[in-house]
Image 1 (cartoon, rainbow, N blue to C red):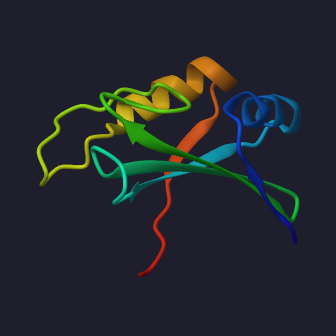
Image 2: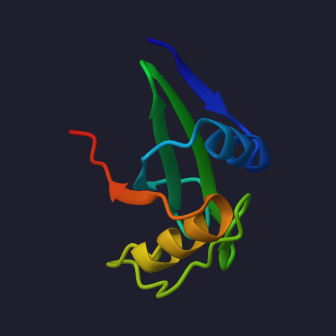
Length: 104
């Protein structure tokens, strides 16, 4: 099993379009060095290999994907599930989108 960290959105998108994963998992993660302090991790699997893409907040959007940041209240996670799903459906097609949690 190999985990590939993909740095550029266009490369990750191209891999998803080529490998056609049935599910792309997402995790809305704290990213304390950013304003607001949130990031997004996208993960899909092909066979035994995993492909991971990480983005981070920069002002009112995520830096690489430009997914909007909404509701900048410190108590809320400002990345809406609907925005993540809409973005992925527009970029890679009608793939299933599912949250993933990492125990911490």
